[in-house]
Image (tube, rainbow, N blue to C red):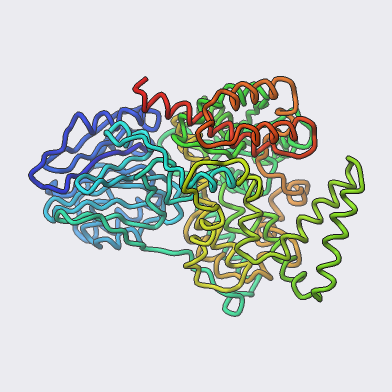
Length: 630
């Protein structure tokens, strides 16, 4: 696990600047505190900061093939490196180290660009082929590890984080076109960024520059989703295959030469990973975050799993103080605003884990692979609701809305409002429904709030993602959307930045590509019989997990920002940070005050929306300091 950075000049006679590459890598020390390495020859410069996990003593990068003509730096882990090494040695390749990264250069020699088809792992790598004057950047199938790049027509800059590109001389200019998408979703959809000219290399993609040509992108894998008419329905066999693959994914991802642990919530996904890991190791440590706010705490359920697994268990409570303490820290970790408030808890959890281990397994990705989000239930409901007569659909929705408006505050009103939102979504087209469900604010409210020019509507980014979806079934299209947009842009970005800020490697067994390929071939009737989420996983783990965990309702990794921002301390923070002037260029101040006031008075729940805006304000302030040379 490392941070990587580098550059390539289009003119082969222009030498790369070693000091420039060193500066870029200097911004990534948190990703690799154990050492650095460089390959600077001719027009290319490769650099790395290393977090030593495999072959701690001998695995320093860059690594080379036998004659030194191919060099590689990697951020990630190749879990099947032992098996690949034996296969490559049988083909005549000679290895100098025990590092997983060294298999990349020999695999490239053996199989060319198709070397990635042989890999089981997470990676973002840069490979320089001197004999062909060829640079290949590659990112893993699901986008677990990040890679950013910028091209000005003469020079390509790349790095694990945007800060490396800025250190390499790229101008920190805002790209306001994606602002509506950020404020709607709380993240900037890949491959875009909030910096002009800076792009995120898409998952399952190579970027290739050869013999001075312009960079070109090459997709090497897609989630193999299928329509219902072609989907598998042999449930017993599917559960059997899934159980074997998940167990093998956990086994492979336990490979480490340094202390290893696991994140543990009270949920089904992390409980499954911990349980399977405990079957292979007796020294597992587990880590849990809790809250003092009612309805958010799952520590008791996590303890029940830890006790059954026999792990050494640690807990920490997250409070409002963590929100204030991490507001600017998270901005530095993400480089651009990131509005998923669960990053507060993820950052705290990674910090607790890093005190004891260097590697942690996580249950992230389970919801995307197993159709575990409640929006999948909503999509099944929408399909059923859509067959009702139009007159009935036009009557039920207004009735719920009117009943909710007549009621004062209370549980019944909130339930009616929620029912109305569900019914309203069911009346929308698929793309619009997904855009609304993923948004923390309405299009109308954002039109009142945002005033920067040339902003693309958030809905268009949903359309972009679904445009190339190969299936027509809406349930399976939702799975495609989650795997292509939500997973890399939100979930995996959060996991990577919050963990690497603490120099902690996080591994995600549910995103073993074999599991993804299996589950994208499965019928919705098996993934979710009726409205039962994660049916396949529940069947696989029913004899291994406590019944309370198997039957617990989904909570997610939510943080109580709604309650925090209604308290006096939270209100003060909102007034100070949102009223600082940092957002005056792009936000209507009066509309912003209305949002804050509605939340404080309990007229609406804008908790996450306000956190999204706080992160935007913090980023705008830091951007102003950069552009002013402060």
